Every structure is written in C-alpha cells, then in structure tokens.
Length: 334
Image 1 (cartoon, rainbow, N blue to C red):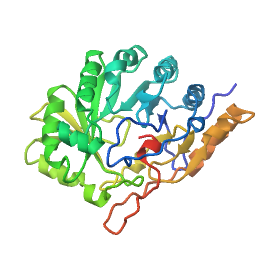
Image 2: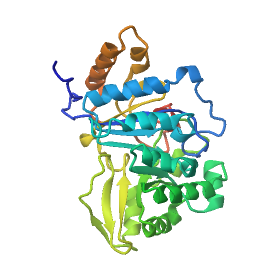
Image 3: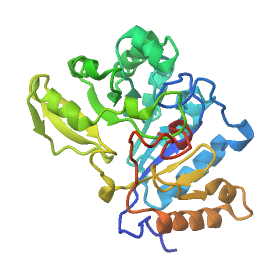
C-alpha cells in the first residue's frame, strides 16, 4: 500500500505543523483577545476527544510531525490529559513533538501529567508581572496561579517559553523587566505584535506597538545578536548578551513571514483555517461525521492545500475600526 501523500500547498510549502484547538473556552478574558461577555460554543458543536484524536492521526499520517494543542485555554477542557496521553503514544511513530500553549492558570495541577504523557516544552501566555495590571488586562486576579503554574512546570522538567503580546501604553515600559525576569529563570521569551482578530472593547490601533520600535529601544539597553535558532514557527530570535537568554519576535504586521509557513490551524469545531489571517477554510467536522470519514478527511486535507493563500493581509490603521477578521483568536486556536 502506498503511503499517504505529504501535505504540500500550491506554493510548494510542506505543512508539518498542526495547531489543534481543543476548546474555545478560557478562564481569562484578555482585553485584546475577547470581550468580557464572550459567548462560547455549544458543546455539541465542539469535536469530541475521540474526534480530535482521529483528526490528529489523519494529519500525522500525512506528514505532520509537530502538534500543538491550543484553545481558548486547553487545560480547562475536561479529560484533556487523556487526549494528551493518546497523542503522546505517537511520539517516535510519526510525531516528533507534542506541545501546548496555555495561560498557566491550570499548570500547577497538570504539569506532571503533561510531562508523563510526553510533552517536553510548553508556551505560556503572560503579558505582565504586575498583579494589578494583570487583573485589568485579563479581567481576572489570577497572576499568583500563573506564576505557581510556571514554577510547577519547570519543577516537572518542562521547558517553558513565555509569549508576551506587546501593548502600547499597557506593558510597553515593562518589557525589559519581563525579559530580565524570564531569562533569570532560564525561560525564553517571545514578543508578539497584537493581531486584528475579533471584536473587543478596545481600539486595536491604540493597543498596537510595532516590535521594530520595541527592538530599537531594547538595543539601547541590551546587546542583541541575531540567532540562527528556529523553533518551527514564525519567530525570529536574538541572543541577549547581558542576560544570557534568547528573545523572539513575531511580527505579522511589520515584517511578513509567510513565505516559510509550514502550519495550519483547526478549531475546536473542526474548521481548518489554512491561514491565521485568512478566511479560507475546510469543514473537517463534516468529514469526520460522514459515512466514510477517512476518505472525507483525506479529501478535506487535499482541499486545504489547494486553498492555502500565499500570505496573510493583516493591517492595523486608524481608519480600520473593524477587525481584519470577525473570529476571535480563542476561536481560531492560537
């Protein structure tokens, strides 16, 4: 029997990285991500754990070697660890890495289980170390739990990377201190430009802080040297001489990185988005619930390769009151 064809799009980019959302629910309400009164999906619309597992296996069979579980907040989903354990059995058998992105609030409970299931590194979203600022930004007073979770993850032997969204007038001045704190704990940090996804109460033009500005400011304080390190994602890295740590930059707005895109995203409802910044999608839930799910899933993945665009078209300016896309990041899956 011939092996399934690898996933290669029309621009000859091989897709080896799947970001799979297990839920749109979250226990925080970050101001740049979703409104306070967010309406979550009915449970019947969300893929079951069995469907998520079947979907992931279909991608692995087509050459996906890196799988990141996302949300919402993935660790608020009941029995999430059972899915991690099931997927962890594919490590060394088609899958090279299993990881997840989390807000850290549940990490103290699950760090040991994640390590035991085969996860070796995680990304934690953290935009401030100031408790009052954290509460304003996330609308929840949960910073102590997040810091406890990060400590628990490191104690369990997990490598931790922080993802920090750079926000003008909010955490701008704190960024050097965040870097020093993270590097002092042996934690890598990546800065991210705010993305125009979904309606929120804030004006994203007011939130937007170009990382070109941040980098220029950091160079007045630190010695930054370009690094050859690549994580498989869009970040570009520098080494910080004074801290001995590594700093990443993800710049969807100031420096388009689409030519090397190797990933697709699937929402918790089974909608495959070929591009975070596009509307091109394929309904894989319908495929999974069809009479011949294996054939329908294979056809859906082939279709995704045909419609994946060459690049996104994110932009933020004062004239654009509407977000670039109506769906929220929590819906898309990180």
